[in-house]
Amino acid sequence: MSTGNVADMVTELREQIESGALQADEKLPSTRVLMETYGLSNNAVYRAVGLLKAQGYAYGMQGKGVFVRGRRALIAGSRRIKGITHPGEHIEWRYSRRTEAPDWVAEHLGAGECVERARTVRRDDVIYEASRSWVRLDVVTVVPELDEPAPCTPTWQAVYTERSANEVRSISSAAYARIATDDDREALNLDGELHAVLFTRTVYATGDDVIGVGEAVNAPGQPLDLEA
Image 1 (cartoon, rainbow, N blue to C red):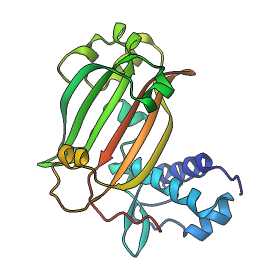
Image 2 (tube, rainbow, N blue to C red; image 1 turned 90 degrees about the vertical axis):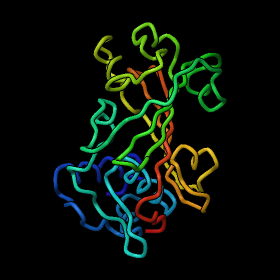
Image 3 (cartoon, helix red, strand yellow; image 1 turned 180 degrees about the horizontal axis):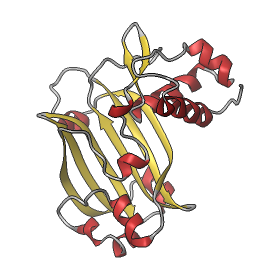
């Protein structure tokens, strides 16, 4: 099959993983095979594999390739929106505040004031993810907890869906690796050494109406293998 579409590649591989057609710890096809199968450039395949990693469907091993993560370990997309966590995970709220939308946020939500929230996720004593979300002010009328100095349980998306009967879903996601910034190191409690982290941005909508955006940075765990 040749689609030339990153989203189709991600969707098809994700479905194969969830169905068990691709088994836990099975190596994904090589970049060349994926390029030929989906009609994509090597850079497009790297982006698609990066999304699978960011969504928890795959992991890289330096010098060996990219492998399927066990389905029991998967928490992504609608499951993450619903607030599902792994055993041993602990979500820590950092802050909630009214703020002017940054430029990239304003491109999705419109210019002006919005609600910015930040949290971290721990596994035991390790902070492995730091995330922020920006939410349109009209969502606060449905989810007033957004303005409160406390976590919104399980997530603001899940609460909005339940109260409004309008499902919130992720409509786009982009992921790439970068060297940790000072803010990344502070949020993830990293030392001063150079670290590669995975950075993602996600857009949330109900119907065709974008109501929030988010970004997350994941701490280094297994080495990132961008060329696999």
